[in-house]
Image (cartoon, each protein chain N blue to C red):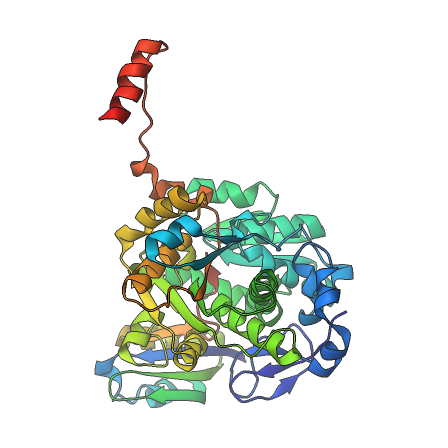
Length: 410
Length: 80
């Protein structure tokens, strides 16, 4: 059952009832869900969780809605794979990859959207909406279809056609907007304020973002009920990063795992790296920028949770790594070739940051390092297309021996 | 009467300018600051603008022309 008791302002601490609200009336700070942790402590246990469903809803005691009502496509409990090949290359004996590329719509967004959609239905909304350049659009469209809701997806008009199809196939109303990135942002924010829609990352945001905590719960359980020594995760709005941290700490507070000593590291591609730049300059607030990166799923120029990410980085002694754009595709390929995982560009960013930190000796070789792979490479194939070179032959053995075996023996 | 909640971010060259005062004096709107962090190199102010929709729009357009950023307080709402 759900133990959410209130919303509280992350800035001034004021409390609000559980409603479709996302900002403090007093200081305009973001709202976050508060739980009755004493009740959770009494209700939950490792055994109870382990005997739950094989998806993220096994952790529903820690979510703002209960699993009985969940709009669930089977999200979560994705593999945590020991990366021996990549680990050997980087000198890491305990490198693990949390592969969220295998969720129902092929990204971690299903975790947040399943929670937001369930809560939207509970609040009585008829329409589900989002503004997206990719993964979120597909996930919202799929969950809207499953929930039988009217679904609206706003996307920039210049988005690649493949991504438009990826969302359109589920039957939402897809609106393509002309204008700059900032124009699209501004319009969507205004529309959300003036319509009775559940916009997953605006008025549903306090609930939506809670879904990302399951990325921490699953890793803790899959590691044998402990938090890793290091986490390397991508940074976009910063929500995923802060919720992974919150998830580990909630598990520790409830007594499911020991105290958390995890060092948190975040990664962005340099074409959109406001959090990395703030970290490098010693600032606690990111300066907004216009994204220009191949890692489009990380292209958030004005990240809502930058301050909270910077705070966690500081508290845990972590680092924020800016990855050169040309390393993104290179490291998508490295991950595919060493571990058999085809990750989207955000995965290339994470692996590139991981490599750099390993080279700089930031990890002890025996420490447990978990890198989060948040989306599937099939969505961003264009980034690695030029690196793919199939061998074309005529249909005879001689051609095979000459062009394939001959080429391989050279 | 309409209301818009925005975050204004100042580049270094504009940090010393009384932009919020001018918004209130040049346009028929009320400005209500809720949070701010202004230093010598950069600064941001989160505030509410109240007035007629058209007047708020004119005020925001003027602020943008001066070279500051005006964003929704949600940060970017368009996600990957």
